[in-house]
Image (cartoon, rainbow, N blue to C red):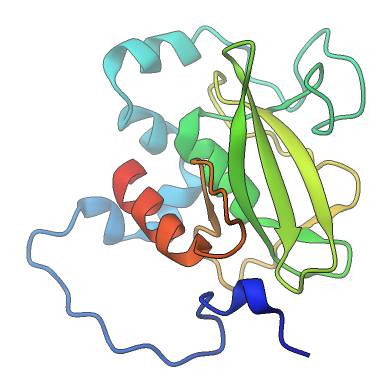
Length: 183
């Protein structure tokens, strides 16, 4: 059965080979290292933002938070910047190990971002809450999720931190634009 909204998502399709640009960013020399190195990610941030997130606690769950982890605005997932949001969400799968796609619905009280998440097969839908003002990404996962097997689709950013009214239709294009803008 075809899932219409995902028609533009290119998984399983052979795409033309991309030509390497001579002016590519150093982070693309070792993308695995960069995606795992929160210190390197943080150094890419503007100085004032870098200084601000350095004031936050190094934590997997925000001290004093309450409610279900990642599923309530009062207990969001701590991550390091917009880049951290993209990496954290891109590494989630459902319990059935199906990767997820996502877009940002908006922001609550100026600090907690709300993301709409759907499994790649369209069978699982959810809302997750993240707070990007921490020095690293949480290693804790919301209930119902597993970490992605790092041998599979490791480098792919699977969504956007912008709102996409036609979500998930058009997500591939927006994810590519978002990746270029953030990274």
